[in-house]
Amino acid sequence: MGKLSDRNIIGMTDGLFSATLGDAHEHIVLGILIRLGLEVGKVDVSSTPYDLIIRPYKNPKTKSSSFIRAQIKTVKTSLSFSGGSRGGIDREYKSNVKTYTYSSKDTDVVIGIDRSTLDLYVVPIKIVEKCNQKSLAASKLKIFLNNWDIFLNWNPSYLEALTKKFNC
Image 1: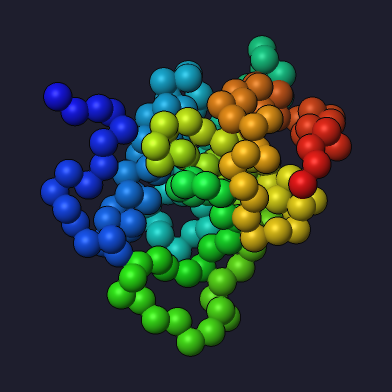
Image 2: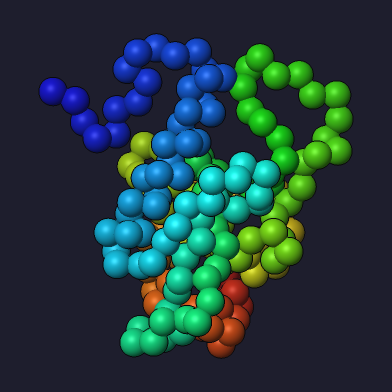
């Protein structure tokens, strides 16, 4: 018998599997958020800097009137906050001109999905901008691990308090 966390049972090459895993994780996060009761939609245009749209709550009883943009990233030991590049061992890059760090221009939240446990790190973009780093170790992000309160309190005062509380 297998486990929910099994991966690559057919032995795909590392580069192809990495791309496939990213696609799978977008769908898994979508399903988890729907299971939580949130309104969520997948963005099928791959050129956008976000993968999902989510309608959060301003407080636990009142839905927001607008959607937020979410970027989904796979977490092994750290959560990357950069985009614009494609992974895979068969890729060769001559410059980093397409690579960028996510900002509030691109997305509102980065959701990291742990590739082993399928736990989610829900990191508002304000944290990414505060830390000004391309990635953070998962061990530093425990406050964001399966923190559904972020979706239930998506308002400036809650997000500001959370940002002040977090040390990069």
